[in-house]
Image 1 (cartoon, one colour):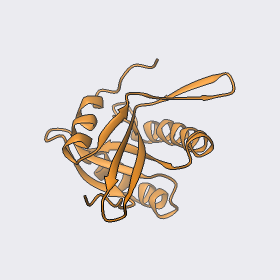
Image 2: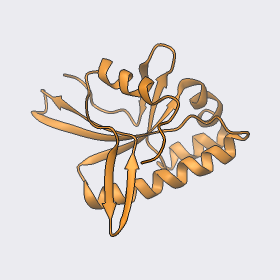
Image 3: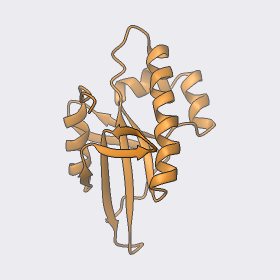
Amino acid sequence: MPARDLYHSHVRNALSKDGWSVTDDPLRLRLGKKDMYIDLAAERVLWAEKGMIKIAVEIKSFLGASDLSDLHDALGQFVLYHDVLKELQPDRRLFLAVRDTVFASVFEVPIGQLLLKNERVQLLVFDGEQEVIVKWIPEIMTAS
């Protein structure tokens, strides 16, 4: 199993505070003979919809020397996990979790805005100090 991200417990705590039940830590996916591990899987009951929403969350710190290099790595992993998840668990949505400071420096600049506009990635933005979710992109229905 891969090492946990620096902000793993922060995101797990933020999800719990937001009413999510973490179901897998990590979520193991197997396609053919290859095992992959997405950091977290969670679900939440939507009372108004009388249903359940399921997510998987891959956490990225962006602590390397280059935000662009970290973005390359994160997007590659996101695309791979997205496609495998779509094949194995099509009812589960994948989100890339990034700190609010990373969101500001990577996704509120033209290259990040282009990725969001073209719906290349779905984000869970969290405050690492408060351990709370700041925003979902796109917005996710979380009313209970």
